Image (cartoon, rainbow, N blue to C red; front, side, top):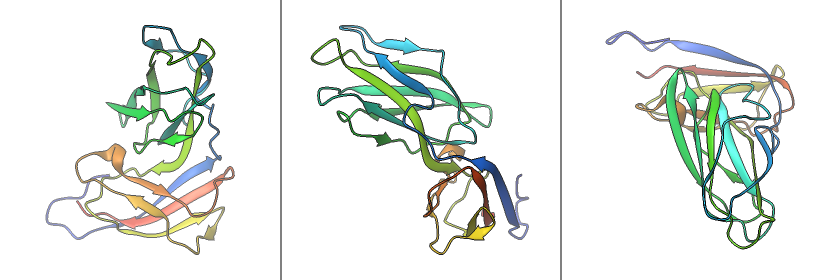
Length: 181
């Protein structure tokens, strides 16, 4: 949906059906890292249910290096690089419709290091915003008491996301906003 230059902003309501809480292995379960070479993965355990961010997580304190995620958003290829932080979950910022390739770094210390890639709680908005114009968010028909956290970018659709205050639970999410572009 594109706003006509010079026209008044439109209020829009976007529904994201049955958005489940993401798990840290929704896209890629524990995957071994090579000793010296990057590991390129093109077959996955799943794909995002709606446009949303991805997460990466190692299996022990030695896991480090950059994971490169390649995918699409609204038909355009996008890439995000996430720095592994041992066994901690690291959340990305870009919303992916699909994941097409994941590049894992070589392992750091031992051939026991693994990486998993999952889905985060940031839902991709279907329009680019020049500022936060979200009016309300609803989970399973109930208006959120706390406004969602909004990231926006007038130039990069994948950088426009909403994170609800409540945990996603498989219910529909509705975001009401007015367009800025």
